[in-house]
Length: 209
Image (cartoon, rainbow, N blue to C red):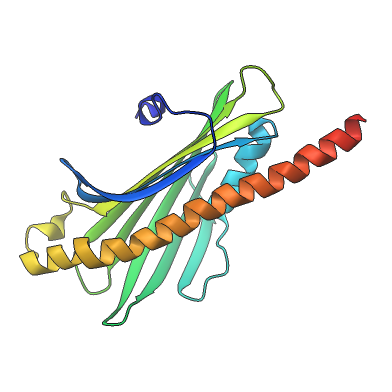
């Protein structure tokens, strides 16, 4: 996929948005978009992003097992998340594939999660593009764009045999709860980028003084 099309016309000013929207192809979709200008070279920002995406954070509702991927600059993760609401408890099993592509003036990290509800055939898909671009005016600064889409996979095998009420429940209840996790992670990455690169900028200023 051409990542330029994902962020076509995007501003480099700091921003964050999260919404549920209806897509003609995917159906109901959770979307998170963020832009974070940072005071460090793109390589430093990419290392922060890669660490945040590949290393599990402490979370009592989630178990994860990580391993190095079979391709260069790749990573894989198996995980189980417990979603707790007033009326139900659902276990979501997922497998994550992470891949990094290094180009002269940008670094692209692509993440795909395939998720299934425990004892059900319905499958969710989470696709994330993280683009770290070198500044055109200052090589010691860069900008990080993140675009994430999560949706019930209409092409998965179990969708054809599922009851309409189960599909509606998955889209209207489970997906909305997964969206809160999506929002939480995207905001955490943005906060981490700002905090760690501010510290980097301070250290660089002291060294250069």
